[in-house]
Length: 263
Ligand SMILES: [Zn+2]
Ligand SMILES: [Zn+2]
Image 1 (cartoon, protein in one colour):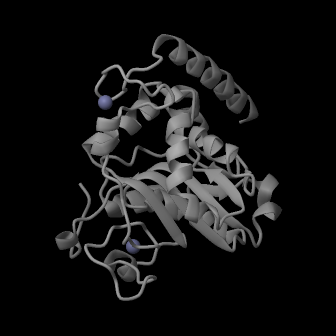
Image 2 (cartoon, helix red, strand yellow; image 1 turned 180 degrees about the vertical axis):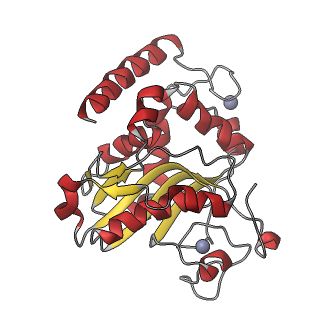
């Protein structure tokens, strides 16, 4: 695992340098030249990314169509089945635009996007981040890590940790105990079954998580099955509170609350 992490660090550094040299100021989404050299997308594309704004469910980040009577009131889905994690903040709706951007980081080797996306997470997730003490990326199975050469959640967590000195990043806090088939084509029930018991707290950090407030970082929350399975492992090891910070969330339309099923 340590070798894989070192390899990942070197690959990330080289890719970031290469990208900065060859693609200094082109919007990644519309490919138009832009002035802002420290951004990855132009202002027009950024504005097309649909941000999740207040009011939203504090538990899962599902936006509410109107202000709730009690600020802490959970959404219908959370009332039906409480997430195992305690709080969540997702920045964008997971739609065509944000999917395009995130997939570039995840599958297309655009690892130089990480500093930009990390800044977005840090800025928009500030209130949640203030509540945590440890930071942990959702892990990939070592087999998939070797294939992809980097874990996008790890890149994001590292960027967030650069500007959150009150938090300690533990890159290998969570581990996958077995390889699972990709979640993308599965129903909500299948997803839950697919990841049940797949994660564990790295035995080296069992003591570190006891009584701690931990924030997990990932790129997207769809049904929340993976994040719930991770939260279960953390809570079983004695974590006091678990938060979730992701770039995007697949949100439900307010009239779809009843009897919903993903894909
Ligand atoms: Zn653009
Ligand atoms: Zn909710």
